[in-house]
Length: 370
Image 1: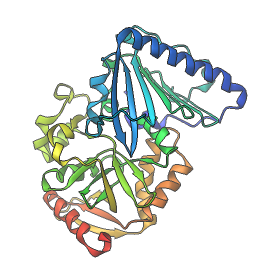
Image 2: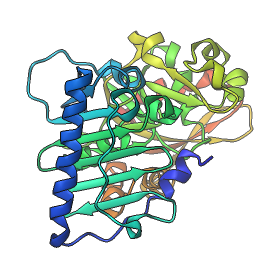
Image 3: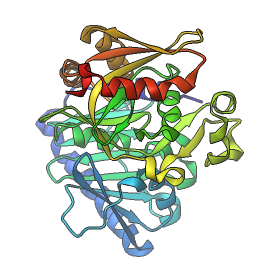
Image 4: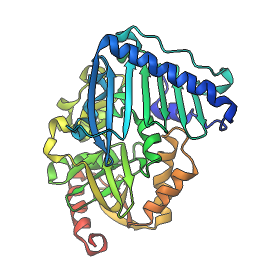
């Protein structure tokens, strides 16, 4: 079975299609949207609204089957409002609605070596089809309308539940000056730290150890950045994933909170933090510093200052490689962000209890508190 990273690395950017191919793409999008509306008419409509990165996002489900698989990770951002959404995402699964996905007009040449299909048409249409997972993501940027189609809600893998709609949110937010990054964030109402690094570097552990310390949790795995006036980390998902053995040995108090205890032999533990620590979850934090965790094997945990260039080299790759068709623009956005705040390596020793005090001390120091 492919890992999440392997699946995303397999998505290669295809050449931009010429205008002659717009017509079949418009026809395909319209057909998929009509099929969704028919499924919604038969199965009923469930509407959920959220504020993500300052934008109102409406999820429109055809029937209730997908709702419990998509909404738990987003529940901390739920919004009760009648204001028009900035983006509408239509969600449907074939199995519960007995609705077949219309056939796409593209040929086998459009599929990458990893078996996924990626197309970008004059910036208006973005499409990612993953046959192995049975998932279609399609976005019409001009209409601010997206469709998320799955074969069956019961086929969704744990990372789709942990980070639902990640591809669509990344695409749309990138066009609205928001950047999805592979990171975590923690802090206080007046400021916080962005925690980067590749998988296994310790960012999940760092953010979770801070939960009971008075520090706020803004997310793990994926964070949304903005920097119009100041660097800000926006929460997207109130979920964390970690290997069960690591959880049992380093964070045993989380074991009883896993949402998938019967599947820990085949997938990571998935915890919805908001369900258990609602008072500790933040929707955003003003970023005062960037931390890059590094497991040292030593006893002490401490900070070491690094340059923006060193931070960028450590921070950017995992974000670029984990987002479909990310490229130079994403790298430049991250580079601008990194230059605005000081960066540190967080040398993770055996004493994890020192992490919250280190973070608090850093946030109160003159070097980052201005």
